[in-house]
Amino acid sequence: MANRTDPAAKSIKGTNPQNLVEKILRSKIYQNNYWKEQCFGLTAETLVDKAMELDHFGGTHGGNRKPTPFMCLVTKMLQIQPEKDIVVEFIKNQDYKYVRVLGAFYLRLTGTDIDVYRYLEPLYNDYRKLRCKVADGYFTLTHVDEVIDELLTKDYSCDIALPRIKKRWTLESLDSLEPRKSALEDDFEEEEEKDEDDQLMAELEARAHEKDYYRGRSPTRERDRDRKRDSHRYRDRDYDRDREYDKERGRGRDRDRDIGRDRDRERDRD
Image 1 (cartoon, helix red, strand yellow):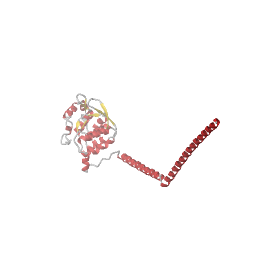
Image 2 (image 1 turned 120 degrees about the horizontal axis):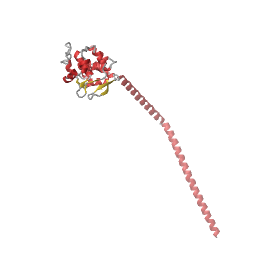
Image 3 (image 1 turned 45 degrees about the horizontal axis):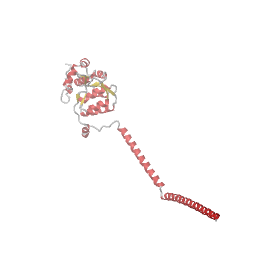
Image 4 (image 1 turned 90 degrees about the vertical axis):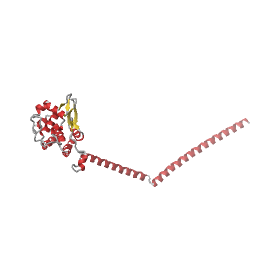
């Protein structure tokens, strides 16, 4: 029958590969026109052509939860179980982003923990836009790296429960995986080196400025400044004293003049 798994297919996670898709969703896929018309008789080689025609991805949509062509092709891959080399070529395909996502999704369902991290993590560097069909039938924009992050960190994707995988740090502690190196790590190191250089230059400039400041405040120069300051202060005091003296002399002359006038008036009366 068209819905039967290939007899040569190996069990995945101890079960029939198609059982990785829930029974209700699987039944909807079998009743879908795309499955009946486009997926019938597909092989691992001809499935690539159908994958190249994809223009969106997603799980189910609409009131009756209609499956997307993407989900139909995922189920078809589970049914025919293509060779690992073919799946890896899907993932490495840089020309067709939906082919890449299809291969990544299938490997997440069927691959070992080590293979999942080894082949999916490099796709974190793919920032191309994707159209995702959501439950209400509308499209939303996402990116390849976001889909990969969902596959590696979430329990559900496209209405399918993802098999559990070990945490990355667990595999690293078992020496099964090498520590992941981010593509931005070199940029971060350059930024850190630049920040350290800037901080060092700032410290050197601050020390040089401090030395200049204390050099400018040497004891000899300080004494010279004090002497100049004192000389100006004494000069100001002498100037103020002379002004007061002149004022007193002026007042004394005015008093003498007034006394002389009074005496002249007294003589005139006599």
